[in-house]
Length: 470
Image (cartoon, rainbow, N blue to C red):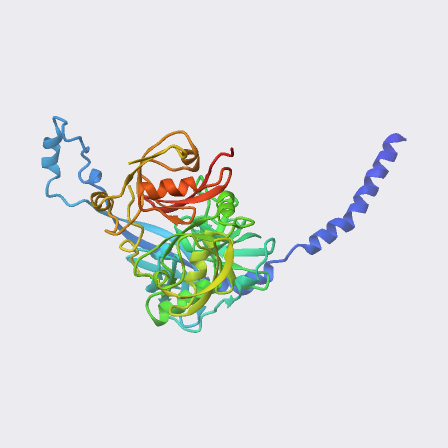
């Protein structure tokens, strides 16, 4: 009797759950139509590259230290030999944006390729040529000799919302037209060495071979180009990144019309604002991009911007962190004068800045390398920055500051000041001598957080320094 009642109860529970399961299934997206309509415009890209072996692979002989007794013996065999070369194959994806054969993909898919073959879903194959490539955005435009091809519909990534369904079509590991789906995990992501792309982060399964393939929204519109994965193993681990389609199409247009990409440029070194730095600058909360250096002969050098300004809004776009600023400036038309909202000495103001063009090579304009006075209150010993020190450090002849010779226990060490730093500003005051630093320190109130600007090998940097309360 009890068993019968239990069975009846279980059946009732199952029957009660069926409407819920049916409703849940009804709310899940159906991708079949989207895939059917858009797959014809997604292509497989295979490339060949010629790679030269390293010095250790010249003749199979070991590379020995100079003081090794057989060093000269082996070198005689290596002398005059050219390192061998060999061909490698790689795979990627792309999608047709013009019926006359223009295809968008990643730069790293076709970089240094000696041969590019595009295979369409109908199994036709074409040799492709690179129309133009842009390493900074990892985008390339290639073309095949064909017409009347199917194309994708271009959407707007700016309308995406976190949690929205998206779908990828590509060729992971060479498996043509594989489909994976997921959701948008985050927007406007900044990756190391990728300053000019505000990436779309998703949990769509992306693997080697998916690079360059399209990311679709539920309306069947391309909203991004799958480009990067974050992985400790080389395979998908739940985090992937796509380039916003608006940025990609602008790059494609410039590559097709001009042959290169022009980006906006300010010419400033920036860093994030920490909680202590925010307090020292009179801000209620940390935000924005803190200007730690203005490069010579740059647009910023001819503008009202100053070192120590915190940029919180650029041409109508909020700047929540320093990482957000390069992408915003980069897509601003070159030569345009735009309003820039800053916080300076605790006050919010707007200045006008004319945007320049980002140089191809910034090494000549980048931050220059940075390598007697005892300031007991900070725990520092500093020395004047003389001409010899300026020349040794590669600084301009009129550069001001004091060089840190020793750091002992105290507020400076806690703030992160290191031996070899050149201190140029403290609490908005320029420092040009040990005496100026002593005077600036003497004026500091106990318990207050102030900003100190130092120069290092990796460029200028603001640190938050707090003197202990009395």
